[in-house]
Length: 344
Image (tube, rainbow, N blue to C red; front, side, top):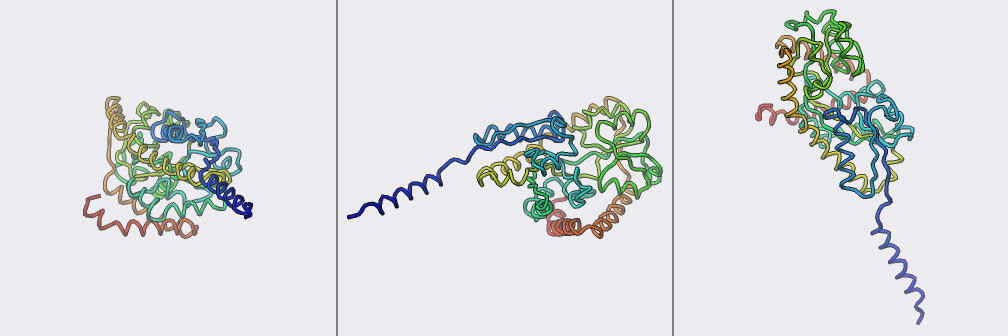
């Protein structure tokens, strides 16, 4: 009896089983945040992500860098695309100049709430479009931070009618900035570090920035009299972990899945991390003498009209923007009845 074929078959079977059970090769992931790691929500969420991955995985070795440590914040996408940086924790708004549709993930005037935004991205087709836009760029996106509503902004003048905005210099960005332009304001683009001194010197008359928990770190209450709540321009936003596609493809399915699951957990952590802090910040602003104001209904009506015009203009110019907007609108129509009954 010849045992050679039998022995060969057994050895082959053992080899196959061994390959199935083998642990994936460890992966090193260098990530740079677009924000200081101490900044509430955005920066702290990058730190939370890195800490969770270190806790839950022995084969994903994360090295996290704060803003500007390796490349400027606005160059993170290019560095990840070129492979000089494995990954970046950032906002899709930072590349909206190249990919206008991404503004719809980074903040939509009069858009969905945070939970509705999350549902659209993960269950309503948003993520498929987002990833498709990046596909030709050699970059993979993983939604990785869910931001709650922003405040309406800081101003050194009252906004009682839309005419009060006429000629005022205001720091705004994205789609909302275009809406403010339509309302008569002169929109100025400034980096976060340049806002305070320009408000202090009167170079600008007002600014939007973020939610109270983040605004308090900027000290705007010292140089602006009025704080408008709630905001209209960004009810929710999604931050992203972008990863070089070659790096992503080198990972096992389990490693990819762990990163995606950890990012989902980070989204929940982010949106719940600022609730109490927002309230504390408003208390601090009031104590400093800040006047808390609300936009009059007629002003909000003008903002909403301007938003609809801006959206249609953008959709007519960019096919990706149109298909993303169509997806979002379809989702919002689908949930409209439930939203009406639950009062949101």
